[in-house]
Amino acid sequence: MRHKLSRLLAAAAVSALVAVPLAPATAVEYAGEVTPASATPVADGPAKEAATQAADQVLTFTASASVSAYASAPATAAAGPTTIVFENSTATGNNIGMSHTLTFETGSSEYNQDVTLDILANPLDTNGGRYEAEVNLTPGTYRYFCAIPGHGTMSGELVVTEGGGGDDTTAPTVTAEVQGDQNDEGAYVGAATVNLAADDGDGSGVESVEYDLDGAGYAPYTAPVVLDEPGTYMLEYRATDVAGNTSEPEMLHVTVVAPDGEDTTPPVVTAEVTGDLDGDGAYVGSASVNLTARDPGSGVAGIEYDLDGAGYAAYTAPVVVDEPGEHTVTYRATDRAGNVSEPGSATFTVVEAPPEDTAPPTVTAEVTGEQDADGAYVGSATVQVLAEDTGSGVESVEYSLDGAAYAPYTDAIVVDVTGAHTVSYRATDAAGNTSEPGTVDLVVVGGQDPPDTTQPIASAQVDGDQDDEGFYLGSATVTITARDDESGVAFIEYALDSPAFREYTGAVEVTEPGSHAFAYRATDNAGNVTRTGTLRFDVARGEIDACPVSDERPTVIIGNKDSKVTNYDTGNGCTVADLVDADGGWVSHSAFVSHVTQVADQLDDADVITAQEATKLIRAARQSDVGR
Image (cartoon, rainbow, N blue to C red; front, side, top):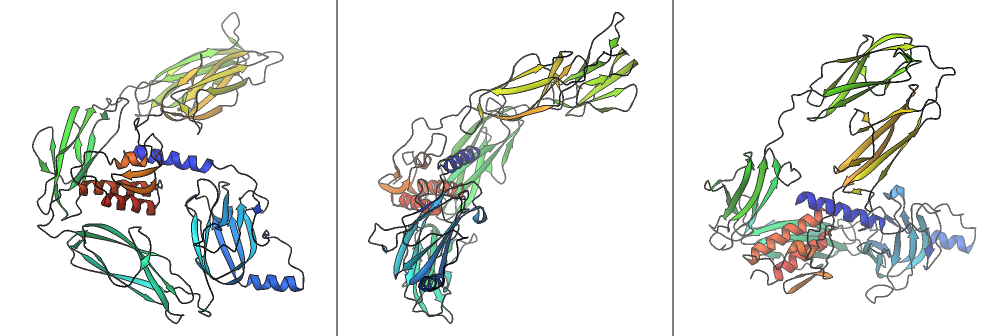
């Protein structure tokens, strides 16, 4: 499951990056004049004085290759003339040519509407993605965002004050202290109390302290925050001083468990089977079963497993199963309050690993060239060595000419010295088995007049159905062509993912999923060999719809609650709602909430959803009627 999810998320990320065309960057509809970094200085006079006044406050916004957030942005500013700098360039981390805008909101009464700013920048435009605009800010809050489709989470707020704090430009510092009884795992038993304190040092003084519990939105902090329901909480907090400086949000995670005797909900147990899979989905050699359990109440006391009905045993490490055949691992967990989960099970098949390779490769040699009536080669002879190994595969091929030391065989051997010659050859496979040397004897007599010294011409191409990323679906077919207008083509060779070449007799079909290197070359009858060419391509398995019957509602609906989180397609036909599985047969509400917490954390870690969206999913699960 983990490997599938990571592949799906990687595919979704690539789709997001290529969705926006790279239009030339321009600046449109803003109050003020946008100028590139290399603009001509303002001339003397009133215009210069105004520009100097604006330059007293410079606010810089930057963007990178991310489509979820600006790379940096100011949180506060003072009212008055201001220079806005927006840079979306390679220097700010945008190395893929992604366009972004810096757009100020003007259609909502919740925000200031007196500055109209809409700058489009791209690292590849004529300004290198850097623009400036002169604006006049007034007290209040401005909302800014990226207007490119699909970049909706790139937004923020700029708080502008009258500047009553004088020279205070430093935000307050905020600290949090959690009080309560903790168990051995660090969880708070029964309840936890969070106390916040802010200090502005020698600045303008603390104006307010705010906190956000589980993404519900910031609220004023007026008294300690008491958390008395079992579960894991995420609490963010910040402070603002009189000068309008707001501290960067700090985050605190707190876990509360039920007191002993009050927990009536069993743990939630999950299993993951890992190992090397063959084409039929069986585990080769062995399989490992990893068990994990969570209990937000009293905590997990222990996990047990039963392999093929042998009886339950304590789970202390992954269960390794190496006996060939079908197996079933049944598992359960007990919490500290004595609640035992319903047994779960995982069924899988183990097959024997391939036998150890003890057989060396088979090697053959073929001599080509023009021969006279006595069988001697006129001008030159070309020796082609071919190696095969059905076990671990050919690792290397070597040859020796006339008793010299063995050298790596990389191209056909051309012998053009008059006289008798002996070519010895051998091959070694990946398991270290080396074949007995083979030999071929030949005689070379005087050459052509004029001799052919021109290499043949060889080319190759790959054909097949491809996906949007250029991967060949299911298989790829490689064809090679060669021509020689003088002595003629003697033979064509190729090597697929191996240093060992073999004779090319027709189109080669490649069906093994993964990345491949296909080398090819041609030799003419005079022994001239082309420079080895290489084609590189990828073959992918056919796409599988993991959720043929999918929940495709616009947002993730959890029972009787709408989480307001976009129901993203994770890439293999499954949506976020499919992974949440609110309609599953949940044994309890707590078990369902624990499941949603795991799903939300995984999707957040994989950047499918944001941390705020993950919190919304967990909150909706807690408030829903699922499992009740």
